[in-house]
Length: 229
Image (cartoon, rainbow, N blue to C red; front, top):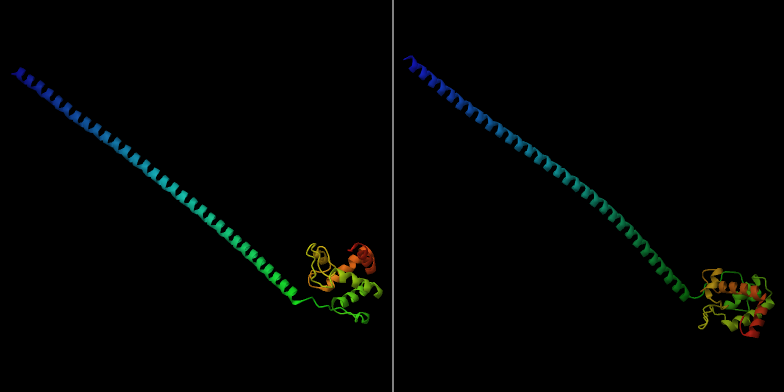
């Protein structure tokens, strides 16, 4: 009888140990599963955090790129506006110059078409026997310091050269005006109205004669000898 109970006790103890082992194994297995699930959850959470961090970084980069692009576009627009403003100003200045030049040319043509510039100087009584440009020439010759006896030579000289016509033009040489200055623009040394003012032309002619021939009669004598002065 004692042996039977002993056997039963041993079996019960074995069964208890087996159940305990199985229960412990279950618990251990469950704990490993929980640990694995926890580790996986941590990995997933870490991955999510990394992805979120990466997305945020990308968003920040995109925002910075957009801001830089907007700044560059604004700078380019400002530069283009400034260049357009400068070009418009330059165009207005050029247009103004063209208009002024055209108006000046038209005024010049109108002045030339209207006739010679009127003489406003004094005419001595000794010159009253002459008229037109010859009368002006006589007065200016006396004013330049030449004697009245020189005027017949001057009259003959410029009768030959231009007929005392302030518009006289030599088609072959381009000489212009009463004294036949070559080129006519030389007379601008006296005044800008050399094309239309007989007095300007005569003053220049008298200076030229004095510088090269001393007197109108000296210039007339040279013209008679060689055909020009």
